[in-house]
Amino acid sequence: MELFTVTQTNVYFIFLCTLFVDCLSFEDNNVETGWSINENINTKVNSKTLPEDIIENGIYWSSEIESQLPKGFNSGDDNRWLTMVSEKPAIKVSEGCGRQSNRLVMFEDGILSCVRHRQNNDQIQGDIFSFHLARLLGIANLPPAALSRLRKTSSSSASSSSSTTSSLPNSQRVGLNPVWDQVKPSLHLAQWSTDKSVVVTQWVPDLVPAFIPFSLRRSSEPTLYPVVDDLIPGTSLTGNNNNTNQSSINLPYLADLAQWSDLIVFDYLTANLDRIVNNMFNRQWNPDMMDSPAHNLVKVKSTGLLLFLDNESGLLHGYRLLRKYEPFHRKLLNGTCVFRRSTVEALEKLHRDGNLIQLLRHSLNKSGYNPKTHNLPFLPDRNANILKSRLATVIEQIDKCRSLFGSCEKSPCASRNDL
Image (cartoon, rainbow, N blue to C red; front, side, top):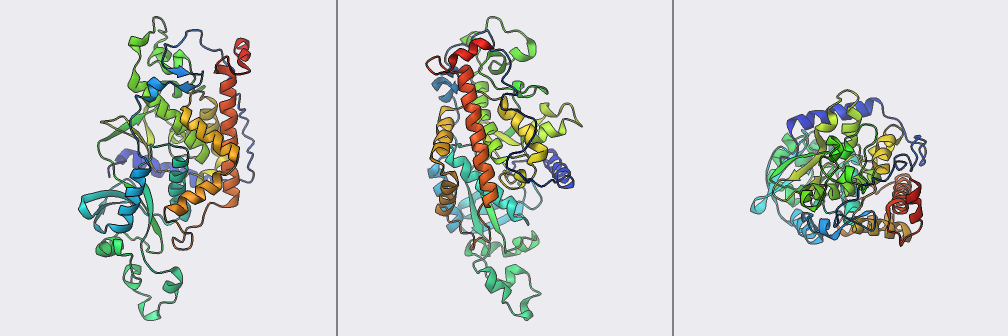
C-alpha cells in the first residue's frame, strides 16, 4: 500500500529517534505549558465579512460546505472489513506500506491491506484505539482497520512447549490462525512474532500528498478562524482581501479545511505527534518544513478525501511526551474556531454523558477485541483520565469560540464588540 513516500518514511525514523532520545515521563494530567486557552483568540475579528454559505452560527461549516465533503468510511465499511479480516485467508505478503516492518498483504479475492506489526504493544494499541475513538466522534477519514491474531493458541500454551521444539520459529512451533497459515514462510521472513496481534488496514489506491493549509503554516499564529484571511485561499498570503465574493470561493479548498478542523481536534485528543506536530517540531531545523506535505496525511486524488494514517503514537506514546509537545498541540487547538457541527455534537454528548471510556471499550469489544486473546491490554486508567481531560479542553475551546464568533442569539455574543 503506497501510503508513504520514501522521503516521508525517512523523516518518520529521524523523528522517532529524536523522540526516544528526549523521552520525558508525563507525571501530571495538567501540564504546565504556558499556553492559555485564550492564547490565540485575542486578535480582532476580521472586519471583512465572509460570503454567504460558508459559516453557520459563527463557528460551524455551512451545509453548503458539508455537501462538498468527500464521502468517507462508514460502519458498513468497517463491518465488512472486520468480516473479511476474520474469514478471508492471506495469500501473498510483500514489502510496502511505509515502515520496514509493515507488509502489503493480499487476501483471497485480491483484497489488499496494509498490515502493521510492532514489537511494542503501545504502538498497536495507539493505532487501533485511535481508530475506534475516531469512529465515536463520527470522523470517517480513517480507513477501516481491525486487529488480527497471528496464532490461534494462547501465550500459556506456547510457554509450555517442549524444549525439543524451542529452537523452531514461532510460526512452526505454534499453530497459526488459519487466516495466516498459507503465508507462514513470509511471516517468518518478515521476522514477525506470532505472539503479537497486528492491525490490518484497508488499502486505498489513488493517493497524493496532502499539504498544510496556508493559514496553519504561520509560524507565530497558525489559525483556522471564521474570517476571510483564514478561509479564502490567497488572501492571507497576498493581502488582497478586496472584492471577495461567492464566485471566487474555492469549494474544494474549503472542503479540505473542514476535514482539517476534524484532524486538529482528533490529533489533540490523541496527542498524535507524528502528523502536523512533526512538521512544526522539525521547522527549527528546516524553515520550509511547513511547506512540505503533512506527515502521515494523504489525499485520495479522485475524491479529495484526507486519510489520517499511522495513529500509533496516539493515546499512549504521545501522552508520555506531553511535557515536550503539548505547546504544539495546544497552539493548533487554540487557533481553531471552525468546526463540523456533527463533530461538536458528538464531542459535547461524550463530555456531557461522561461515558467516553466505556464507549471506547464497548466499540473495541464489539469488534472482537479481547485483552487476553490479543495479548493487548486496554487503555490504562491514567491514560483514560488524560483523554477525558483533553476532551474537556476541546469543549472549553469550542465554548470560547462560540462566545466570540457565535450567533447573536447565543450569549455572550456582545463580547465580539470588545475585540
